[in-house]
Length: 205
Image (cartoon, rainbow, N blue to C red; front, top):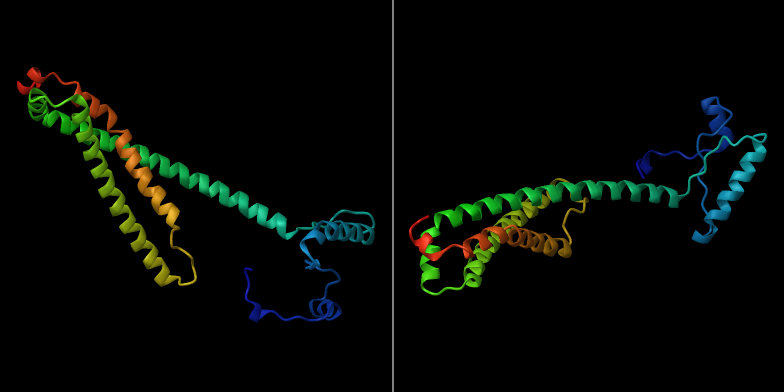
């Protein structure tokens, strides 16, 4: 709630006016009988305050649903921001994987030519590079999970009441996204390797 209930003192309204030398109230908390009565209670409070303040609407009535809706909008914006950062990170990681695979193709030209000269079809060569990209992505995702769980463990030790453990679906989605990104960005290098001419590849050209 943002405050410590042990530091709250409840006194009559008249006593509070005398104690603080004031004639008004800053906030009034009203409890409805049930959730369905919130809207009617809000309208009744607005009407009563309107009549008692000589026809002036100088009071704001905030319901719990409105507060929760505000927090939902804030959390949605934060989620979109974090998702955008994650998307940029995945794009950068994908470009790095693609560069690594292009370097691997350049360094293995003769091996690729030998495989094609021995009768290896282009599909098999593509699958080899896809497997290497999946291995790189898998190692990266495992390393990320280890670091993530280590960070959550440290935070949990510092703030025991803070829920920092990721849900199981988020872990699965992170691994699947990492593998998918690695394989997606390895398509071009794999196709480039599969299209090499065997004679030129054996000659190192």
